[in-house]
Amino acid sequence: MTAAEKLAMVKAILRIDASDTSEDALIDTYLAMAGREILGWRYSHANPDNVPESVPPEYEITQVQAVINGYTQAGVEGQVLSIENGIHRHFNYSDMVEYVRAHVIPIAGVMRGTTSSVCPCNCGCGDTAAAGTSSVTALAWDAPRHLPQRGRLIRCRKRQI
Image 1 (cartoon, rainbow, N blue to C red):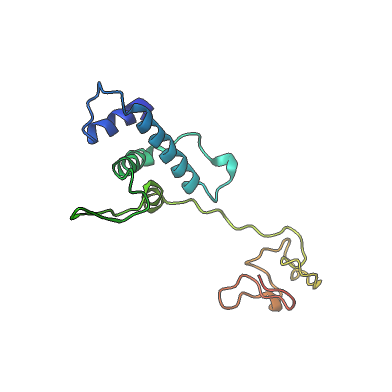
Image 2: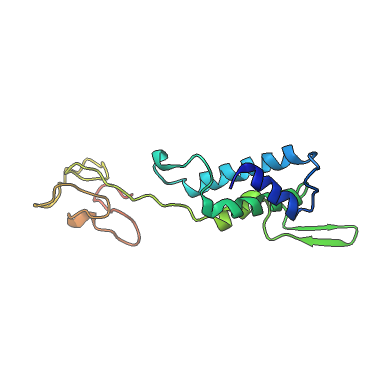
């Protein structure tokens, strides 16, 4: 979807006449902000070389909806409830960023360990990998003192990470 198509979609949903260009700059700014937030959240733990330049097609509608949420909440950002002159307004999301983070699934990176054969917690204990292993990772350390305990990655005799 092109930027012009996204702009037209937002204007149609907000019931802004297509020929009215007075809000185009603001909507374009919201589209850019939402796009950056989607990319930043989606690829926050990914390799920077794998981050696309534009919003993936599966999140274009999410971008448009985030803009609508941001546009309609202008002036009450950060609030989920607004009461003025007896009028109660309740918002599901406090701002556009919260909407994006609720609807975009971040990509998680694979945890990689050290490629050395010594203790991965760098405690200086001198322990080495068990025989037959070529490398050591934080989650697959073979030495008994380094087994995961109570949800911690590594328990070394000197340092816990």
